[in-house]
Image (cartoon, rainbow, N blue to C red; front, side, top):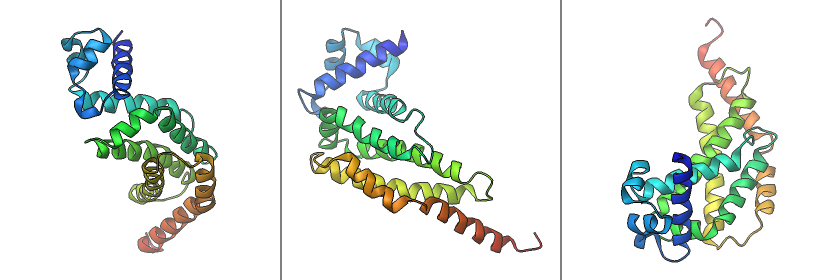
Length: 194
């Protein structure tokens, strides 16, 4: 029942975002639209931003389910673009409101989950430090989110598949190459007698 109530609150928030900006939506607006009490809302969420974050994470899990491997990362990124397109009014309203950094944080978290899965897969059997793996995932995360934010700022006009294909040309083989460099550097630093 708890998940059903949370999803209903999320749907009410999305509906209200079609009508007015985020900074004008109150907990009362959401609960009234949803047909639940304020106490029910606060049982599940601290505030509207907590509801937004939960909504993003639920959507992200659905979008990236099973898409965190080297062979499927392109599909995962495409699904992130599609998720943003499906929730266009929600995203654009959030992006142009006071919580723009929340959209960015969400995208960073979402793409990091995808990329660290790819890096972990490609580093299997390699002796590469966790901080080096994280650095690689972070590097690509910032590149991808930067492209996506430009796409959102531009009104989501470009075709996501074209952007992903162009990104694929840049990434192809580079994750593995970076891992090999970090592994080689680590081996040099540890020396032959270690």
